[in-house]
Amino acid sequence: MPPFCPLSHYASVCLSTLPSNITKPKSQNTERKARRKGHHFMMTEEHKVEAETEAQVAIHPDVLETIFSYLPLIHLLPASRVSKSWNAAAFSSLRFNKTKPWLIVHTQNIRAPHATTAIAYDPRSEVWLQIHQNLPTRHVSALRSSNSTLLYVLIPSKFSFSIDPFHLTWRHVKPPAVWRTDPVVALVGHRIVVAGGACDFEDDPLAVEIYDINTRTWEKSESMPATLKGSAASTWLSVAANTKTMYVMQKMSGVTHSFNPSSKIWSGPYNLRPDRNIYFSVIRFRVDSLIMLGFLGDPENPNGMKVWELSGESLEFCKEIGMMPKELVEKLKGEGPSFSSVIVNSMADIFCIYNPEEPEELVVFEVGHKGLCRWGSLKNAAVSDRGMVAERMVLTCSDVGLGDLGRAVWSGQGSFTVI
Amino acid sequence: MSMAAVETKKITLRTADNHEFEVEEAIAMEFSTIKTFFDENPDASEDTIPLPNVTSKCLSAIIEYCKSHLAFRARETSSSIDEQVRTYDEEFVKARDNESLKELILAANYLNIKALLDMLNQAVADRIKNKSVEYVRRFFGLENDYTPEEEAAIRAENEWAFEGVDPDDD
Image 1 (cartoon, rainbow over the protein chains, first blue to last red):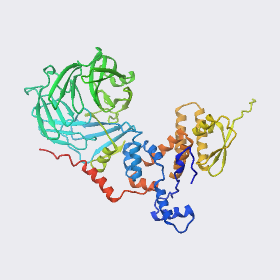
Image 2 (tube, chains in turn red, orange):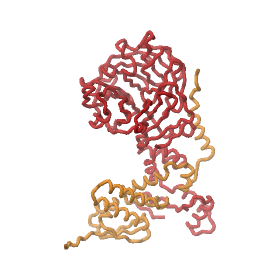
Image 3 (cartoon, rainbow over the protein chains, first blue to last red):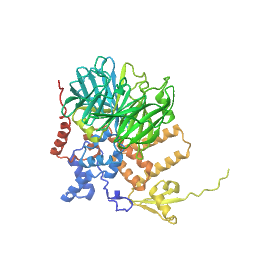
Image 4 (spheres, rainbow over the protein chains, first blue to last red):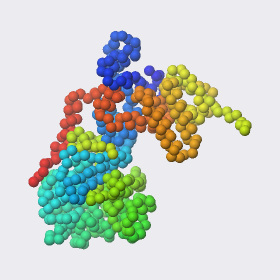
């Protein structure tokens, strides 16, 4: 054994020499080790124990943790089941290469709604993965997403939704009483709020209903404020929600209202835009502060996109935290003549922006520790060279931990392949 | 063309198995542990440096690696150089078995050679990727120390995760 050296604690690790031929049965290995160790023909009890522990301390835990930080989460999973020490090292390695929320791109064939595919991007290791749902749900209508992890399908006879990180399990419940084509839908804590978007023949275009996931019941609630008449649909309204409150902002005017589903009270209007030059803005939550993304200039000549963070009890503190680099604005705008709409999805600190007319470019930014943005772009692996032909795309963002991945894989619900 | 003789300082390193290696200063300085030692002890340039944690087999491989990378860096950066570096790194790792990779990692860590360490860690990670639990155990010669009860508990926990979901409510 190498003598102890103060420069490195690795000196205490025994460099066991195991045969590289892996088909030899176990008993032969331990015998060989014993012979090499002390040239004893008869193994004493002490040597037997040492020989066995040698096999397990083969790679020092610190070195193992570093190696694990290079492994994509999906490959870390089998490594975490190899043995108890590897399991500990796997979880421990996540302390210095933390898990990050996954971006999931769902594509659906327009003419055959049951034909859906889901691919996910793991920003921690920068890999794309295909998600296979082992018991696929047959959807009959368009998939829609809302603030982060909620994916849903709404038809007059049924409301289907999924809130697990990989959307492998779905709940199918009675639909809301009011027939809706394009409502604002948001998951607020354990309630799903469905507001506006009512069909023309319905009496109240501003009707709001709440589905409680725990009691499995629908409840009517105070309608949206009258000022939202004419824009009470997800086409016109951007929605942000955390576990307690939901905010809706008119994308064009910036006028914002908030809704508390437990008190069922609407508040507002608030004018949150700090800059008169914003012509389009959307909102998302980041823990308890609101993140607003706004385009400056006008649709034909956008001269930039900025990010603000609004915090405080009544969102009175507004701080600019980032500006999209010019080349990313160009990428997002694409070839089109004007830039009138973007969709933003987010989870925790990861935000993903795309232009529905140019789905192959995804702009991603991460809000760092000091509250400032780090920008990057991503080629959407779900879009082939031909572009999206007869397909619609919907994005969700999920918090994914090693445990979530383990449950999805080992319960038999889903499988993942690196693309 | 006459060139003035350039005296390159040489440093002697002694390995665990008592072999002495004479290397050019530039190469020894790639080992951050040694560089730090010299930065803090500028007068101690005559002595042989003992490396009780590194075998001669490891050290000769590491010296080769550092020599080659120094040569690559001396040339202008271009995509073909990058390609050559990649190929060199792949070859460096390819023929080695897990044991020698582990020894190299420990030595690179002890000598504190960041680039080599990153490359080796990635190489071992690549060997773990996409393999089943059983394969990884056999490949690294590891014992599964989970008892059957513990395994069953883990399985049950994962299956239970989806029990709370209702079947279609209609």
